[in-house]
Image (cartoon, rainbow, N blue to C red; front, side, top):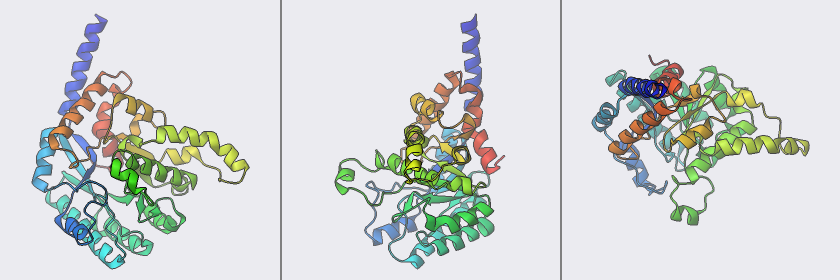
Length: 336
């Protein structure tokens, strides 16, 4: 009888959740102007794989078939800076205004995170104010590093002050590390290892400087299931006392930092990966992400169904499944 009750409960939960539409916090729109800029600078393969094609009708079709209510758009890598701040700012402005138009043209379907023309901090502050105050951007996308300037660096503190004042949501996304071993990435493309490593490096840098603790009105979404953070954070906690004693590191305000991080499940959300992630966060900080269009729509649709299915079978996660698929993101972005 208990087994029958569990099966019926599972079926009810599964069909209830799959009928509900998800909110996708990790997807990209690849504009033709962005591709053209990269081509002019010979940077089409800078991230070691070609940029996928994208158009709005295909994205909407994917959302419909997968059961996604709303998608949060962000600019893909690489950062469009090639030594000319004016060129970069122009490219970023075009992208942000194009996203704002998509949000207006397809109400309820698209939100967007504005890009910034880093590494020029002054230009980035100007664009952040314009995007958040005038365009209605739903957040800010920050590359883990912009031509070697890593999120968490002291140079970015003035930008963080502006974003904190506006209670901004930051979406992190890995970019090509700086520096990088060209031999290694020729053998193993960035997405396989360097992207998770790069994300982990950047978040640890932010924690070490207490960036989230010092700017407490920021909320930061970490991509790809937290990357290597479930391993890196306990190691950092274990090493910190001796590093402080020797004067190599400052105190870290763990709870004040970690409580500001959210995590999207794009990429590799297996049961083992998510259970590991829950050693450093709580289910209310987990968000669905597809990474569209970097894999075929059919693959991403099956990934979403598989994610929903195994979570619906997991006694720990079943009560949180509806929130992970949409509720947590809705609360974060006030998207009802």
